[in-house]
Picture (tube, rainbow, N blue to C red):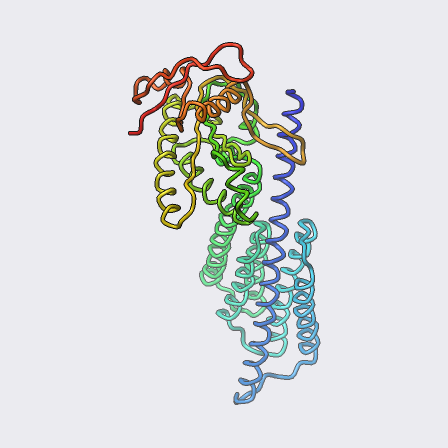
Length: 419
């Protein structure tokens, strides 16, 4: 049994790691798509503005066939990246790492070429334009989730600005240090922001995946302490089992969609009450509901919380029935059985279908006590162990010792008065 549990926990960890890798890859693809579109838009705007300025300038920019060839190649690169990122539907983490790294060097090389070409043509260098240009290269990393790409963009930009300063002859210790420090600060801020955003989205994705087969409290424990939260435990808990009376005959007069809508509304209200009292909503069994207090987190007052939840369920049912009567619909009647006992709690199922649940005689007895509510003409019964565990916090009446299916000894049950 221990080996099976360890294998299940290991599988959950592998699933989480695989899913996180997929999230990073998809995020990288979406980010690079945004960078590609931005790069192409910037090139288009630069081309338009350069053409307009050359038309009205007193001294037009000297012709440079080499520049035309390089710009054409770079524009083809921009369009190619846009087309590729639009067509690719699923990101590859390893491919994205190397491709984006190469894009950074291509962008930097293009900007460096212009600085070198301007120097060759005798065009005066403009330190502010060079700094802003390479700041744009760093800003591209806003849309990239990998920290290494932010570091690479920042390092390449700082080295490029220092190189251009030497090439164009405007290098100065104060000015160059100031420009490089600003680029470093921009890179650090973008890197910090990207790490926080990526962690947030990975956490959200992990919660969504775990919530598909784990109760909310267990999800929180797994996120906080890892797979150890899923290790099986044996502990005293309080089990609440509720059931809708005569649900079969009620549903016969309803369309399938109406049945689902009715149960969704009913369980929505009752489940909220359970969670409000920090109980674990374990499962729905047709028109029945199983909730437990005491796992995965230990609660000294688990019996008190369960009984309080049951009383609030009774109160909520009065509100729901008042609404139903006004609409001309039949009232809902339920039975609630509560028992305190020792259970085993942990993961059940294989890799394809896992479930965190509680098993043991206490679960069965809570169900049997709920069945007694119909025979004894009441909506709420608690076992003697639950009533004793509550320590006199509720007003109750001893009904007697009742026989239940599957047990030789009788079960002492109590009714609980509304507060």
